[in-house]
Image (cartoon, rainbow, N blue to C red; front, side, top):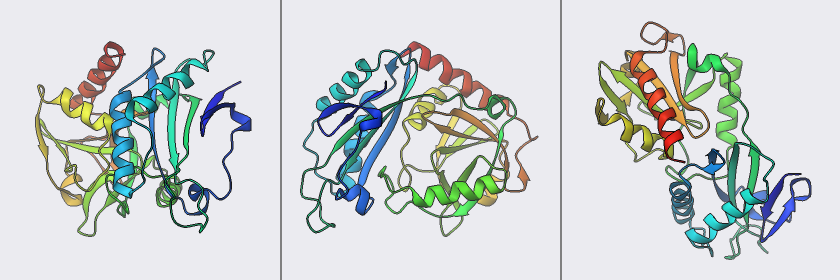
Length: 278
């Protein structure tokens, strides 16, 4: 039986619940973060919790827990689930109950959920994936919030087009990020990624930039769609997916239509890093 932490107590997953007057239910007010384990240890737990706290600050949600409090709850929740192998750890902080159904009252709820990691399709990594583009921006850049309706609708469009992800474009058609991924492109041996302001700063993005700095030239700069389509290689990154090669954007093949050597170098580097840092 899987055990969650919900609002101060450990409960069986099937019995986990929050009141219907919580602002996460009524208004979609809440923040979240997700990390995964390697060798049953949370990967970059401190960085994920830091981002969670920053998200709270960005949306004006006062949190009564310290970073150390949340980390200990995460570790305790893992201990309550010894039968699971590698897992996702989802942290959700809701807006809490509100008498006027609108205004946070300073009593948010903390939820930690543990779920098994589903194996992703091997062909994503061996053959690459197709993504589509959509003019859409996060309503609050840099904050990881629970209101994912725009992303869910975008992913529905992707599935209808036979694509795996969606690249968000701003009004000037600069590529920003994806629904749950960060975006990179290689032009020769230069790795280009959109600037951190205006996107959600992914933890895996940070790791990739660190791993790439001794291997490639790096440029954090605007990435217009017309330029992106001429890249030699394109890749997306995320907590669960790692590094995924992109071989087609909309109807345009990228490079020779196969995962490129620089992308494969980063895939190997990230895999090695995850094994040696947990």
